[in-house]
Every structure is written in structure tokens, then in C-alpha cells.
Length: 407
View 1 (cartoon, helix red, strand yellow):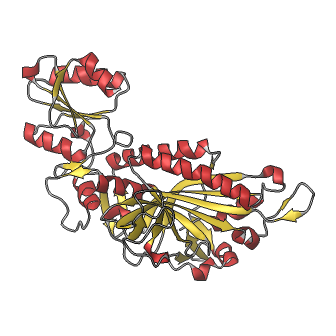
View 2 (view 1 turned 30 degrees about the vertical axis):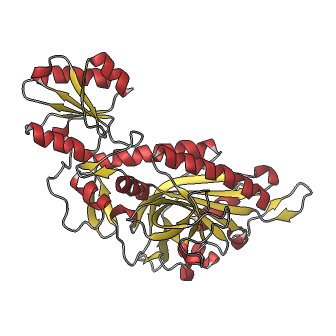
View 3 (view 1 turned 135 degrees about the vertical axis):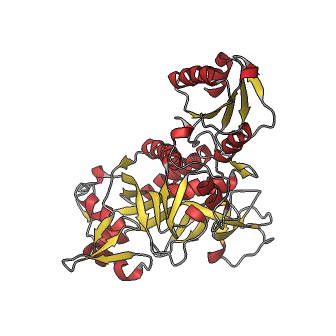
């Protein structure tokens, strides 16, 4: 792609209203545009990042046996009345049609997936079953803040599993937990598995996957000596207290939730009278689990974690492009040849062919945060100046060597 043709160019100045690093940099670099509080447009560059995150999540959910579906965002009131969520869930967006019927915008999909699964679950042989989707969610947040970390509209992966009993759910949860940790590692994030309240979803303990960041909305106590971690909201411990697992001193930190797991028990299955026949022929109710990952939130957390005074530093796994090619005056012909070779070899490259100064192009490359910067200039002949976004020094290489480095 050529930067001169790209919609939504980089800006020299950050937005005046930005209160967090992710809001500032994502708008300034042209990845998002804010429509109103908590609602954003994702530009071609921003969408490329989201699609990379989406694919990583999809691969790992498929690996644990999840089957992808796509459910409606518009829900009938009756389903939410069945579970009691219509009056209990305070963030639920409600709307009325011209015919007088009431609907809700999906903030979660237990009310939809459970009657859907009821169509195909008849016997213990149909279990376990795990269905997931990647879809926009809507929550009537009183105060949307922190850029794309906390929105009223956001992209989410939500998976729902059905099991013959609690033991089967527990076993599947451990598989999903490992998959989640693998997902976050691939995204460049280190997530702490944190005990938390189930909130409006369930009275049981839930687990949140937290990434330490000053832009987070939660305070957590964690242990450096082991993996113990707990949300401040459900504990009376304080910083310095002994870890309940290993005895080391607990630390307090600000964190942002990027994923969660809820043990839903049998509530939603009972609400919709979902049962299955056991091996002995008797009927019983399946146990359910719910597993969420916020894609747009993860994108914001990545920016909060990976940045410097010059801009974003995308991990290679989610970067919109692998490389950005800066072309200096007089090297256009050779730059086009190199660009074509890179594209031919499957390298995602953004060509900065704008009529701007070298300094302006270098600044844009840093702001965009693309992992590799390539400079084509007349004085370098057929050598290419290659530099990683995180490196201080550049290196002159020939095209074959460059291809090896980028692959």
C-alpha cells in the first residue's frame, strides 16, 4: 500500500481531548477516529490491527474445539425477561420499535446462545459443545473513558460452553486458560489470571485476565513469586500482606482487564429449560461457561504498553504492516523495484511515497509504530537502510538479506 493514497493520514499534533496514551497515539497516527464518547471508527490501518488480533484469537479458539458462529446484536425482550436480565443488567441498551415491541442491543449473548444450543443438545453424546463469535457489543456505560479501553461499543470474542457436569467444565476451563495465556503472549501481553466477582453474570468467583497498566480501571494485588492474583474489590488484603498461595509479599498495581471467564453453572440452561439425556436415560441440566476477550480493548492495552516519545511500537504479530519504506528524492525507481519484490515475496509493506521532507517521513514511520523501517536513498545505491523500530542504529543491507530479515 502507498501512504500517499491511504485514507486518514498521520497528524503532527495529538487530539486535545485525549486523556490516555492509546487515545492520543491511535488518533494522531490515524488508526481510529472518535465519533462520540466510547464510540470509534477504525480506519484502514486500525482495522488491519484488529484483524490481526482477531485471527490470533480465532486460531486458538479453534484449537480448543470452539466452533465459530455469528449471532444477532438485536435481541428480543422476551429472552432477557426469561433470565431476569432485562431489569437486572443496568448497562443494557434498550430500544422500542415503531410497532411498540421492545428490544435490547447485545452486551453479552447468554440469552441468545442458550436457546440456540437447545436445538442441538439432546444427549450426553452432544457434549461438550463450545460456540464462539467475534462481534460488536453494546453497553450503556455511564462514563466511557480511556480511549478504546472502555467503550459503549466494542469488538469482543465471546465463547459459551456446555458440559455434562462441573468436572467437565473445570477441565475445559483449564484448556481455555492456557489458550488465553497463549493468545495474550502472541499479542505481546503478559496477563495475570485474577480472581474476581462474577458480577451480574453469576454469584460464583470469576477469573479476569489482567495486564498491568496505569491506564487500567482496576486495582489488583499480585504476587511476583507465584501466579496468585486477586481483584481489590473482593478482598480485604493490602499491599505487603502475605500471599495466600506462597507467603511472599503482595504488590498493588493498576491493571486493565483484557479477558474473562465465568462459571455460569446451570442458571441459563435452567432458565431456558435446556436438558439432555444421560447415559442411563434420565434428564439433567448442563453446566455452562462463558469466555470473553475484548479485541478493541486489547488493541488499546497494546498501545499503552508499547510506545515511546516518538509514537507506537506495535508487536510484529499485530502490526498493520511488517515494514514501512521511506523513499528519499531521486530513489523512486529503485524503491518501486524493491517494493514490488517485497510484495511478491509476501511482505506486508507500506510505501511512503509522499512529497514530504525526510524528517517528516521518519517521524511518521515512528508514530505509526511499524516494526521495520526501510530507507531508499540515492547515496546508498542498491543497498537498503534497515532499522527496527526499537533499535537506535540502522544497517545497510542488500535485498536478499533484507528479505531474510523480514521473513
